[in-house]
Image (cartoon, rainbow, N blue to C red):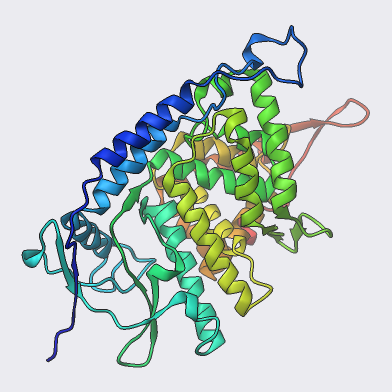
Length: 427
C-alpha cells in the first residue's frame, strides 16, 4: 500500500509580536478620538445620544482577538489538535455526529512539531470548481451537504471550522465511485456557546414563522451581539427593532401570496450579501460586536448559496436552515429557558390559548428536514424531556378546554364549547 502525505513546513517562523503591538497602538489611538457633533440633532440633544468617541466599535478588543487567532494559526501542533477534534465530531471514521459525515485527513501527531505538520493526503476537487466540472446534480447534492454540515456545526454541536470558504472544501470521489465532502485547513476552530446557538435557533424561527421583529431584537443580548445596557434602554430597543425591520425587508423576500403554503410556512428567500451589509451599517449605531465565527460562517453560507444557485437558480438556503431551526426548537436538547419561552410564544394565540394550527404548522415545518410524517416528528419530539413536558401541557389544556372551559356567547350567556376530537390525534 502506498501512503501519500501532506507535509507543511513553516521554514521561516514569523515574529508577529511587533506587528501586534503596532496594530494595538493604532487601535488605541483611533478608539481615543472624540466624537464629532451630530448634524441630525439640536444642540440640546439628550446626552445618551451624544457620541463620546468617533468610532464606537471596540477596536482594541477586536485587534487582540485577531492577533490571538493569528498566533494560534501559526502553531502547527494546534492545527493538528484541531484537525483531530474536528474528525472526532464529523469524520466518516467513527464520528460522534449522526447528522454529518465528511472526509477529514488523518494526522500523524508523533511526527508533528510547532513548525511541521504531517497529515494524510486527500485527493479531490475544490468546491469552487464544481460549477464547471462534473455532473450538476451530484455537485448540487454535495453543496447541500456542505451547507448542512455548516448548519450542524453552527446550531447543533457549536464546534465549527472557522474558515469554511469553498477553497477549503473538497469534492472527494471514493473508491466505490460515490462522492463525499472533504475539509482542509484546521488552523482555527471556533466554539459557539450554547446560549448563542439557542438564540440563533429562536431568531430564525421567530422571523420566518411569525415575522416577530420585536422578539428577534430582544434576543440580541443572548446572541452576544449587543451590550445589555443598550437593550435595557427602551428607546434604543425600539430603534433597534425599527432598524431590524428595515434590514429584514431588504434581505428577506417573502412570497407575495401568503405567509403559509398549504400546511407549511412559506419560507422567504435570504439575500446574504444584503443582510451582512445592513448589519455592518448598524455596528457603530448600536455598538455591535460581530464575533469572527459569525462573519466567517455567514460568508461561507453566502458563498455556498452562490454556488448552489449557479447549479439550481431556484435554490434557497433558508429552506435548509429554517427546518433545522424548527427541529431544534421543538426538541430543545439543551433545556434552554429562552427556547422554551420562544416555543410558548409561537404556539399560543394572543389570548394565551394553545393554537392548534400553529403547532400543526411547526410539526409540518420540522417534517421537511426529516422527510417523515408529522406523527413521526411528534414522536421524536416526545422522546426528549422538553417534548414530553410540552405534550403534557397541551393534553392538560385540551382537557380543560373540553370538559371545564366555558366561553361567553355574544348575548353574554355562558356556553360550553366542546371539541369533537383532539387535534393531535389527526397527526
